[in-house]
Amino acid sequence: MGTVPIFHWLLQARGNLKQVKISLNRKKGCEDLPIPGYATRGSSGMDLYADVDNEVILMPGEIRLISAGIYISIPEGYEAEIRPRSGLALKHGISLVNTPGTIDSDYRGLIGLIMINHGKEPFSIKRRDRIAQMVIKDIVKAEIAVCEELDETVRSHGGFGHTGK
Image (cartoon, rainbow, N blue to C red; front, side, top):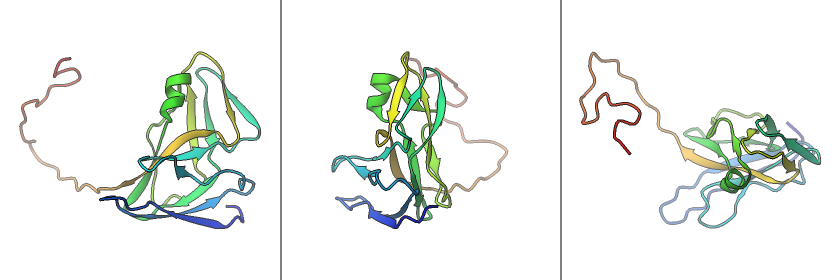
């Protein structure tokens, strides 16, 4: 990690929302990138910004890892989900290959976004472009119990398309 100072931010409590403290460290040379933040009071996701030199062209069908220029520390019991921006998806066919991407609470590496161009035209990614969003989520741990039979439901073994249109 770079020698840039660590930043902290809180998810602000509004109504019944929880608060969680996330620590952030910028990659060296990324001091010009905005700190991830919420665009509006009702936003669920924080914008993430492109850490590219000048411009990267994502060709149709191409998959490329794009740095967000940050490292984060998430408290145990939470994860960060990385999701596409709906406007980029609708207007240009830009998405993330592993959507939603998961950043575990024990990961401390550089945040990278696995971007794909599903569109028909090359797409330009410039430094500081908002290219994805990050949502902080609670984690629930499951306890697996091996059993002889599962309980029955109305759907039971009905598979894909079973419930009709």
